[in-house]
View 1 (cartoon, rainbow, N blue to C red):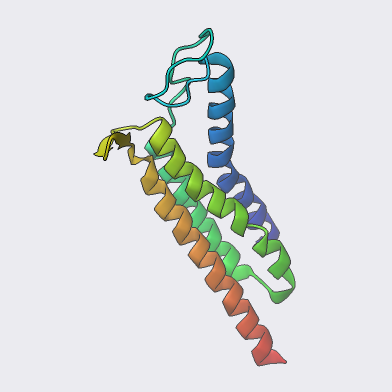
View 2 (cartoon, rainbow, N blue to C red):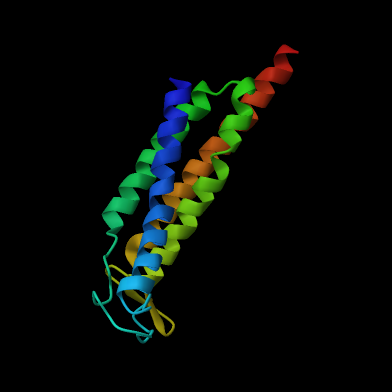
Length: 150
């Protein structure tokens, strides 16, 4: 169960960064290099900007699933699994950052923020940060359990 939930958590938190990479590379290739609304096209456009929109509900759902899976991983984590669990820290941070970037380049339900708009996708980053906190607390708890034994 522990290994399965770690793998699924890893897959879930890699979706936002993968969506961001696909959006950016796809926009460079197909949307004439236009990766945000404020940019101009640099060459011929195959598909107009935005190439695709990432809905906030998708990212928030992934964030909630990440929290649930992080709780499962934190509860079932053993000290011997610490290295494997620590490998999830980077993808969780990447998911949080990707949510904020996607909110900036393809805002959904945009809110004015200075001269730009930021979409509601940034809310998902809060869930990914919460999942990261749960995971880190689980690592601390497994260390404490190990010290209490030995």
